[in-house]
Image 1 (tube, one colour):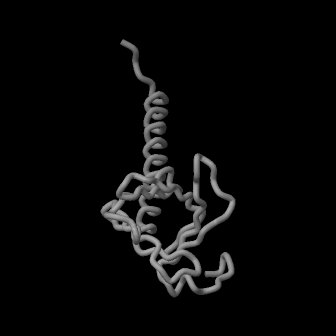
Image 2 (cartoon, one colour):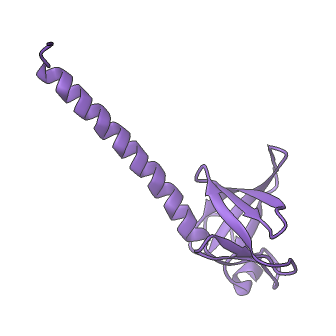
Length: 133
């Protein structure tokens, strides 16, 4: 039977620690994004509610029948699926407690034009300089 060297044991322990650390950082980023997307969202310059995301994984899109589902993929893609299974993918460019800037992804191609959503109708009506809100 082969004897284990102390250096082999330390190398294995370090490898496990690195894998655990990377895994926890990846999960933390996704969980933070999932927490920030929950709530009402109004499209910039609109007073009408665009959609409401609930923490139970459902989404309400006014004007559509029933509740849909939502999820976050790759930490930066918000996937909205309506009651009938129609899916919209929004790449999250930036998100904070007040607003979310996204680009729609259609057929795997990301739009060049950003869309900004706000948690309140009042916020959606305000003019803000990017980076200073």
